Image 1 (cartoon, helix red, strand yellow):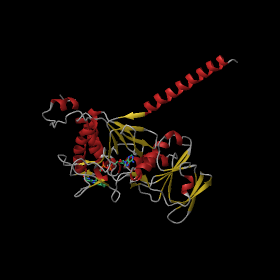
Image 2 (cartoon, protein in one colour; image 1 turned 90 degrees about the vertical axis):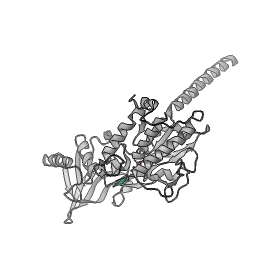
Image 3 (spheres, helix red, strand yellow; image 1 turned 60 degrees about the vertical axis):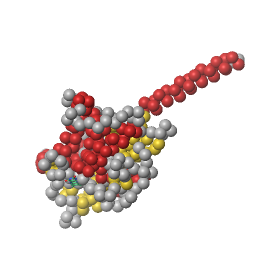
Image 4 (cartoon, protein in one colour; image 1 turned 120 degrees about the horizontal axis):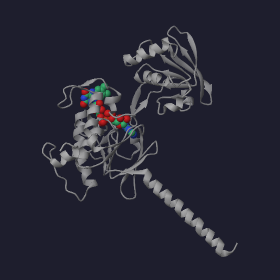
Length: 370
Ligand SMILES: Cc1cc2nc3c(=O)[nH]c(=O)nc-3n(C[C@H](O)[C@H](O)[C@H](O)COP(=O)(O)OP(=O)(O)OC[C@H]3O[C@@H](n4cnc5c(N)ncnc54)[C@H](O)[C@@H]3O)c2cc1C
């Protein structure tokens, strides 16, 4: 092969390499989502912030580790009445969440559920980049941390050696039902999550058992009735007992030993254990974001609710300042003031105008009511 041929081939390879690199750049640009504000936490405060930001034409992406919006209201007390939301004499946690979703609908926020905001870094062009544990990357000039009491983490049952099986045979959440198809599943717990997943997975499982330490369930009565019908029909096994030991090797579960109230030992064969023993709240990755913390809370000023880092805000239960009250209405106020400062960062050349929704046709157009 002559020099000219070698050069020609090298040229083609370089061109191909260049094209590949170009494609990688295009791909990575597509993979990074851009917005005005990244809101970490889709609790009531994160949701209402979308409204206040939307009135100022600011777009938001929300990230939440839960599979739904509403934070504590939807996860911890969906059916409990709240009596101190202004102008709503009584509203349940779920109703409040639903109303907030309706209110922010005109602004079309982007939700990233089932994802934990894992890291917060600064980009070369001065933006903030949030990466989730699912690999989603979002960049924005501002970040609003509305993480409440932190991430909801499943409570790990006190069963010796359970860690060895976690992630292969023992799970605390169902992210994809497909994973549990044709498995011999044992669901542990007596609340809504345990009953809901037992009912949802039963048609897809090879076999499904439910184990709870007493013959009384905290779940919705309708779910309990459905579960009892399946047990009567022989399509689900119910064990009133406590798991004592797990059996198996190399992370693969083969069965459990359970203890009934009268200390009788039961051997239950299963290859998958789904344990729903409730949730606790931990600050989680927010603690590693490099922001000043005080007793696991984020100190902010009370003019803009900004943290020690310019462009990073903290609103709702996660922040602290003199006189702070951990109430939903406080978080709503904080979101409104934060939005003003976010506007200054995102639209430095535009004038911020104070307007009422009652009288501004501009705001009414944004809300779709004009
Ligand atoms: C039983 C009970 C009753 C209550 N009653 C009232 C009442 O009557 N009136 C009242 O005003 N308040 C009440 N509260 C308090 C109220 O619920 C909180 O003040 C409110 O939920 C705070 O809202 P938030 O959006 O700041 O946080 P949260 O509701 O805690 O929401 C924060 C969200 O952030 C998510 N999150 C956290 N970290 C991450 C991360 N790293 N990545 C992704 N997502 C993350 C969490 O999953 C969560 O969904 C009550 C609380 C409880 C527990």
